Amino acid sequence: MLTIEFSDDNKQQPSTKTQMLILLFAAMAVLLGFLYASVIFMSRSYGPESRAVEVHIESFSASNFNVTSSPLLAEWKVELDIGNRKDHLRIDVEEIQSLLYYKDHEISCAMALKPIKVLSNKQGIVELNFNREACGENQPFLDDDLLHQLVEERRRGKIRFSLRIQIEMTFELLRSSWSWQRRVEPTCPEVDVVFEVGNEHGRLASETQVPIPCTV
Image (cartoon, rainbow, N blue to C red; front, top):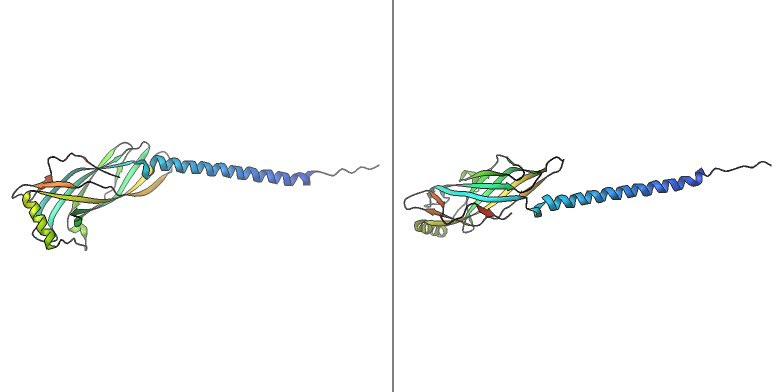
């Protein structure tokens, strides 16, 4: 009697495809989990909440200070210390824009476009020069009442100013292809600048402790 045996290949094929799909989905799940864990690690280690950046005011001075009219005919120079607190991270400071305020009123502007690189656990100094030209067409204006207050404080020998700063940065994780951009807006405390009688130059009050830390 002739016996015919049928192959089981057709029965095994669907099972093999199912196993391959399961393995594929498992591999994708592992990959996505790894990517998610990497993003969380990067965010906690080098993201905004990690406080990789430190900003301090190193010096603050004024020259040619004249308060007889608005806009003010004066120049200010501020030195910022930008520190990198992280290992294996480089910070590229691309651009800094800053506004100088008196009693919440803008009085001058500054912009630094020369990039600097701050390596791991290092710091870099940036000089901001405030003057009318940096404000462009939007010249700051103080009304007569504010000018009078400014003149009175100048006569008493001490004026309080404040800064608003925006820093465009690029962060690069060393020995990897990870890099990202971020805008940092540090909050700096008000500073007291003293002027001697008959002198158009001002400097930080002697009781000021420098460097002055800003909150990032």
